[in-house]
Image (cartoon, rainbow, N blue to C red):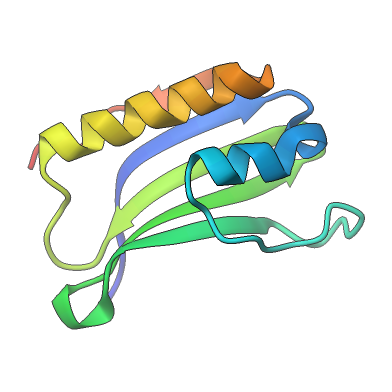
Length: 110
């Protein structure tokens, strides 16, 4: 089953310098190697298991200083209040490590 985008936040700045802190603030697992230009996936968190229909939060790198965080779901979206809480956590984590949020796709209506 395909995943549907519910929230997307783009970040610019030297996140690689603070990657461990950023991942810890958002409870993302550690993935990827900053030294490998081909690595794009740098962390994820499963918010809901496969049995209930995946809901995932993923961190990806697009260029050295361009990153994205995506909340996706398989069956049912995350409730709007939980999406807004997650958005707040992401924005706070970005501010804490000194990177800039450059774009946000609003949460889909749940």
